[in-house]
Amino acid sequence: MHPTGEVHGCELGLAVSGFQEATYHPEVSRDVRQWALRFGKECANGYLELLEHVLVILQKPTHKLKQQLAGYSKCVASSITELIQAVKAMKGMGWIDPEDPTVIAENEPLEAAAAIETAAKKLERLKPRAKPKQADESLNFEEQILEAAKSIAAATSALVKAASAAQQELVAQGKVGTIPANAVDDGQWSQGLISAARMVAAAANNLCEAANAAVQGHASKEKLISSAKQVAASTAQLLVACKVKADHNSEAMKQLQIIAAQEEMLRKEWELEEARKKLAMVRQQQYKFLPSELRDEEQN
Image 1 (cartoon, rainbow, N blue to C red):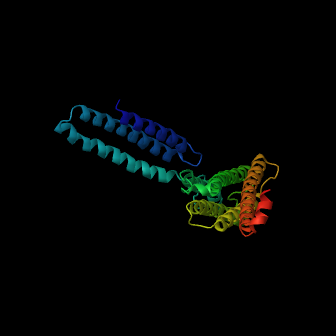
Image 2: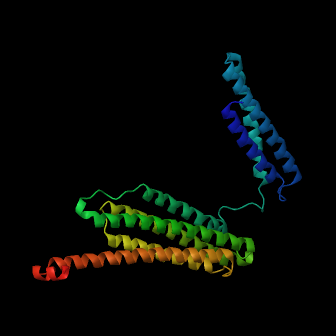
Image 3: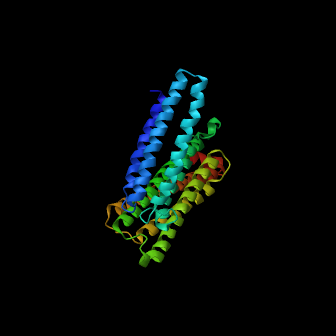
């Protein structure tokens, strides 16, 4: 079989498998199930016949075979049209509403993690700017900036993924859902989690951009520290949002708290390193203004 045909065949097999599972959902009626299965089968068979005919044309491209191709395409298109109508009829109360705040809250931390990872990948491609030999100490520090920013970005990504796991655990336990009695309360909680996840993603992205600018010499280290503090504030808010309804003894929450502590430790280490650097610079400046005889004493 042609490689393209093999790929499409695999994709078709996966699609048919998922489709069959959907048709036997408890909410789907017998008539709709039979309708969907009939045209699902027709669509699959028609698609395979179309691929086989394309393969024949590739081996023996005659005008007659090319004309027949339109007929195969029309059969597949007709089956797909019917299948779409059947799928629309299959939709019931058991299906996920993408506008449901609980569903959005479940997905938002994962989207935030993806955004943070994208920003972190930019840092991976960065290198400190070239400097004269006498600036080796500063160059070292810029390398530290990159490594610290990468570590914080990775820890923050892990944090929002853990938050997503904690939220999924709440849904599985039935503590959060679309139950009418709790709809308003759940909606407010979900919105809080969504907002916190988005703030974390934005803060982490700002941190990566600030690290990039600092390394390239376009931003102050103060801006970098400010960005790190934004990450601290937003991750703290995310942690609070997760704790509101969570079981504090659950594995997901324990993991979330461990990752949050690790992320905080990385930020504190970075701030401490920055403070040491500032102290060294102050001492260096003071040393320049000392009289020569006092400098000799300092050295001795």
